[in-house]
Image (cartoon, rainbow, N blue to C red; front, side, top):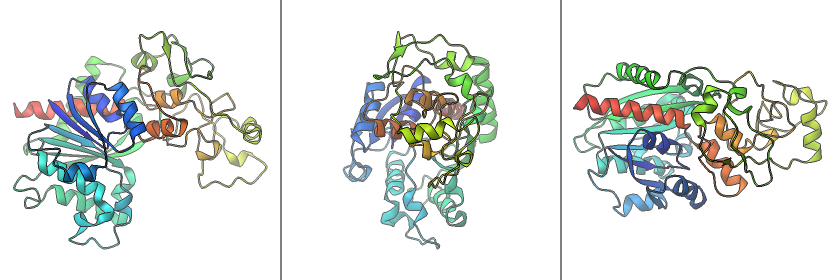
Length: 366
């Protein structure tokens, strides 16, 4: 089955579909550095490095190009759309990223599309924007007689055996109108548990990263022996794994970290810390989940990202583990780009579930 991945990032959403045997026909990513990581990890995919606006208007896609379209259009424009939804919502230039996602769906006419977005999209402008998105994809006139039956669900990473408190909104549309989404969701979970009995079991920070050795300058370390089911699931056959580097913190930052215990944050310090983040200078606990991995996980002031016992923030490999990326997935680029790639990614364990879910929906058609 053929898939198009829009706003692909480094490929977290694609990863699960490839693992389940889908064929990613094309991926679209605007940032060339991030696209390079996608290309290096998914070399068989035709990657288009361009603004989706250019791709939409250039006629790159045509009807029938894919059975499934996946992707998460950034929602910055949604939050600025104004208190009152106008009939011109889809034509508001501030929402152009969403508009072009919609246009590709309209052109290709896939059997299913998946849109991933932040939890907050539900409450922007009092829920009116979310309602408008659902309405547009269900509009027979806008979609030339082919409206989608829409299903949406808030997914929590911890429910998928991922050690972080990440929550995301998943919107799924299908032209197969007789699908009972809740039944298929339950069936998909049962199917995966038969193949991977431990898949949905709770995972802690220790379960995810405790077997990793000291960081190195080049990020390469000997492949450690898995000590937990989660580590076994993400393990690779390679002799070394990569991206295990540490951030060079200032002496002031290190001294602050030394004073912070497990589960504590900046409030444990006897000084004023200027940070908009309530978890600033937070230290992780081995036996707990991590908070949402963000693009600033290398910054002590960015949230609760200090290693449970070392006076440093998480390495990219540790953050990738907490995001459920396998150990043989390599991130390329400078530090800022790599943090962005990991923090913005859809956790692969969630994307694999969604791939199995989509397959079950399509099998209902047969």
